[in-house]
Length: 259
Image (cartoon, rainbow, N blue to C red; front, side, top):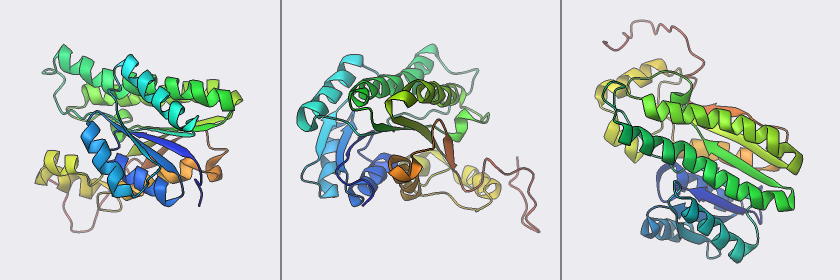
């Protein structure tokens, strides 16, 4: 087991990609800490993992006191944090001309400031042991312009740069810091937000012609949390079926989606 005995915190772990990562960590021997703004959801998620030594906590990642309370609870219980997956976040699909300052600030505060607060609090504990793994869940929306992604894309682009700064500053303390940037992933959120035209467009533009699964993101998280990735640092791993790599593609007689 690649993560045997590790204490692994996953924020936003009550469902979707976060829960899939927590499940994969448990399968590799880690002790899971599921943190979510929905405490009941975190408890229910933990119950599905069959990890009697795990912990479920409520956290508002955009609130500094809440974040510090979460990390202190983990340290009080286990004495350390070995792995952090900064997964908590919210979506958004409001056009640039229509987005309000309130929505902008909320998106940035959760998706970027929240990741900063959690990473900083965990890193301060990791520094004491001169060891740790931090994985930030970024997005292709932080790499390419997309309609309705002004706030979300800006937050995720900022997270990629923050990861690089963290990598530079934390390397001397034995802490690896990397990003995972998911592409189109088959989550409940995607099922709700992506209509048929959107799905057709994604499937045409993805060389593998399908959405990814939360489990495929989890596989990448396990790798980046393991010793196998010990010399991978400050990197963004796109898990996107080739979407970011592709240029103009022709698929024989399969027409591109209408614009």
